[in-house]
View 1: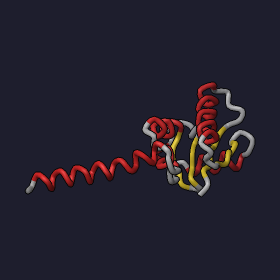
View 2 (view 1 turned 90 degrees about the vertical axis):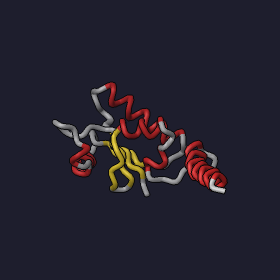
View 3 (view 1 turned 180 degrees about the vertical axis):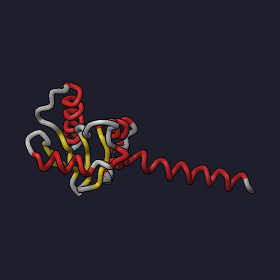
View 4 (view 1 turned 60 degrees about the vertical axis):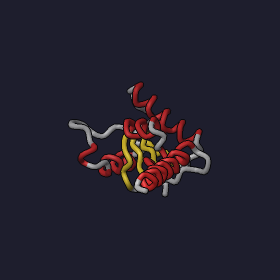
Length: 128
């Protein structure tokens, strides 16, 4: 599985530049392997990104803007989806990757089933 981040190296939008830097910086800081695909310097990248963003994820008017994330050819989302996953400590799940041992996301993944089992045990004790 390869994470692909579609960016525009020559975007005139400060917001898009900041969003791209945020995504790329996070992936680099967390040592998540990815490929950077520049839609400004490569027409094939631009065409592929635009064709592979699902219809229901496209803007009402105009073309999809970067950054856009894919896992191989599976569309993951735009910056807002990435940001929400990061805020919820769910970036690895968002990317379709397994959280590394000791990460906050891994701990939270384990807490949920354990909490569920604790509730079941408590319910079982109350039935006696």
